[in-house]
Every structure is written in C-alpha cells, then in structure tokens.
Image (cartoon, rainbow, N blue to C red):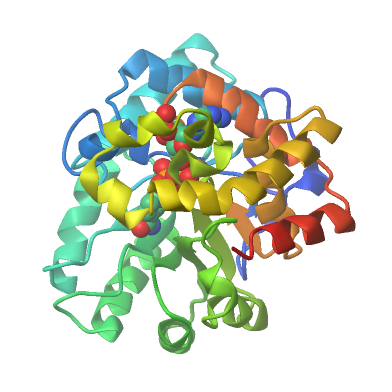
Amino acid sequence: MDNQLQGNQLQNNQLRKMGNSDLWLSPLGLGAWQFSGGKGFGSKFWKGINQEQVTEIIKISLAEGINWIDTAEAYGHGTSEQMIAQSLDTLKRQDPTFTDPYLADKWWPLARKATSIGHTISISRANLGNRIITLYQIHHPTSRSSLQKQLKEMAKLVGNNDIRYVGVSNFSAKQMRKTQAILEELGLVLVSNQVRYNLFDRRIETNGILNTAKELGIAIIAYSPLHQGLLTGKFHKEPERIKQLFWLKRIQYGFTKKNLERTKPLINTLETIANQHQATAAQVALAWLITAHGKTVFAIPGASSPAHVKGNIQAMQLQLTEQEIHQLRTASEL
Ligand SMILES: NC(=O)c1ccc[n+]([C@@H]2O[C@H](COP(=O)([O-])OP(=O)(O)OC[C@H]3O[C@@H](n4cnc5c(N)ncnc54)[C@H](OP(=O)(O)O)[C@@H]3O)[C@@H](O)[C@H]2O)c1
C-alpha cells in the first residue's frame, strides 16, 4: 500500500481508499484555505496566520495521522500553496526521514478557458516546490470552456505526471455523471466531488449528490465540515462573535441569531455525546461525517491554530455508536 504516513501513524486499516483510485487516505485531510496569508478573498474569512503557525499546524496534523492536505490556487492567489511548500521544506530540513503528504489542489475555472490549465498548473506546481499534485480538482462547474475541453486538459496533466487523479468540486449529481462519462472515454476515473457537507448543511443527502457518489464509487470530500466553526458551539456560547464576522461569511453560512437558536438542540446533542466520549462537539461533528456513510465521505477541517488541529484530529479515533449516529441525524433535522 502506497501511503505517506508520518509520526504517530494511523493504523493502515484506518485509512480508506479514495473513490475509484488507488489512494489510501486518512478520513480527515487538512483544509488549507486558512493559509491564505491575509491575501485575496480568504483574508476576509480568516485571520492571517504566519509561516511558523502553518508549519506547526501541518506538523501536528501529519504526526497524528493525517496524510493529505487540500489547497487551491485561489487561496490567497497561490499563497496557501507556497506556505504549504515552505512548511514541508522546513519539516524535511528538521527531519531528513520526513515524507511529504499527498497534496490535493484545485484549478479555478471561473472566467477562464481550459487552455489556461497548462499554464496555471506550472504556477501551482512551482508554488508547491514542484511536488506532484495527487488530486487536481475543478473548483467550480462554471467555466468559459466546456467540461469536455477542461477534462481533456486534465487528462494531459495526468499524462505529463503533473497530477495523478482528477476530482471536481461543487458539482451537481448530473455534472458528476457527465464528468465520469467523459473521463471514462479518456481512460480515467472521477475520484471525488468536494462539496459543503456538515450536520448543519445536509443538502447533498437529498439533492442526489451523495447517492450518485455511492452508486458510482466517487468519494465525497466534505468541506466546511464544522460549518466554519458553528458546530464547535463557540458561537452559541458567545453569540457576540457573530458581529465580528465578515458580512459575506455571515450570509453564506447563515450566522444569525435565529440560526443559533435553531441549532441549539443540535449543539446540546453534540455536547452530550462528546461528554460521554470525553471529546469535544467539534470532534463528534467530524466523527459523524466520516462514519455515517461508511467510507464514502472524507472531511477536511480547516484550522487557524495548532490547538484546533490538535483537538479536531482526535475525531479519527472516536467510535460513535449506531445510536449516536442516529441521534445526531435526528437532532440535525432542524
Ligand atoms: N471547494 C470549495 O469550494 C471549498 C469551500 C470552502 C472550503 N473548502 C476547503 O475546506 C476546508 C475547510 O472548510 P472551511 O475552512 O470553510 O470550514 P471549517 O473547516 O468548517 O471551519 C474551519 C474554521 O472553524 C474554526 N475551528 C476549527 N476547529 C475549531 C475548534 N476545534 N474550535 C474552535 N473553532 C474551530 C476556525 O475558525 P477561526 O479561524 O475563525 O477560529 C477554523 O478556521 C478549507 O480549508 C478548504 O480547504 C473548499
């Protein structure tokens, strides 16, 4: 098995095969939008964190068994990719036996043509210190080029060994099927669809995305698995925190007083179950995601401090009972 585990490794049997690939990944990956360096759109969503903090977050993640990181060229206009590469270089200097994690990256298609992929991949790879991109995802379904054209370019990247696998993000069930069919013609498979999925936002369970993933063997990568912090309970404890959030984040993620009230029973259930396991609400919310649908769902929590990642990562060791999974499902039917 070709895995890239570090330090206190997860047992091999805790890794899971990502979709129809030969990749064995930890159920949690590390989300890296937070490493935008205070640049671009991300800076409004996240406070900037410095290179030392990024190195610490990555070091802890890998030491505790995470073996992949999710980034995007859009995160801080390449800053996230660069910060990850710098941290991996530092960790390699500190320990020559250090092995890189797998890297998932994303191409930004909005207002762009497929012909730009060949150029943008060279920038992303340079940002990443010329490391191979294990999973390259089309960030959104909207582009100036057809899906066919974009996927042909992606296939070229596989042929050139720039990337190993193709994934998508924010694609509907119909778009997943279309992508899978085109990739099959190109001799490839669609490995994953990265979508928003968490106990507050369970739309993929009813809009066909999750069922299509299960039927076609495509992995779901759940982004915003903590609903950007809402499911940690910290906004319920200190509702005034909402006022400090960027207005678009408040709207996009429903950070309102009404939603805090509506989700109180869910947070109570998360905390009750957490107490039974000597865990935190965040750990239970993450454990639910990676357990409730067998091995289909991976989750990529983002962290803006080493303390976040230290706690969240323990979700991979948390064994929820069938009854607890059911209880959470019921409590989240808001
Ligand atoms: N494909 C896409 O379109 C897309 C969209 C969004 C995200 N993503 C990916 O998914 C990853 C994760 O999603 P996300 O960052 O949107 O949301 P998330 O993982 O649900 O939330 C991360 C945020 O929650 C807070 N948090 C995390 N652990 C905590 C803890 N233990 N205690 C208290 N607060 C905690 C932190 O907020 P503070 O920093 O405010 O403290 C952290 O930055 C991103 O990094 C990115 O890689 C992809």
